[in-house]
Length: 64
Image (cartoon, rainbow, N blue to C red; front, side, top):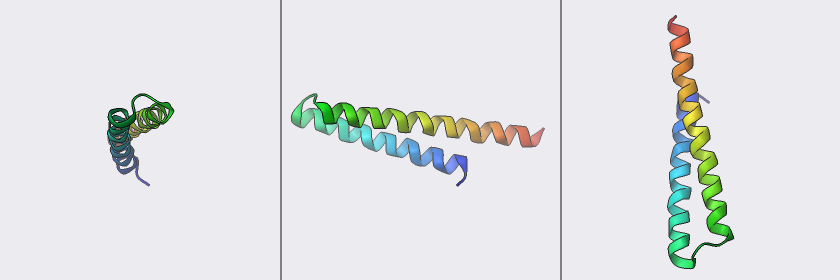
């Protein structure tokens, strides 16, 4: 898979897990599942951003 597409998908999944975590906190408060959803969202957003930066880094290195 291409890094840009994978990065966008990971960022979207991170946003989705953040939304689920917000809904979980509103319904049941801060519990284990809320923290788990936030951990997954953080990992997805971090890897998504890293893959997007990797795409632009590879694109710049090919031009040079």
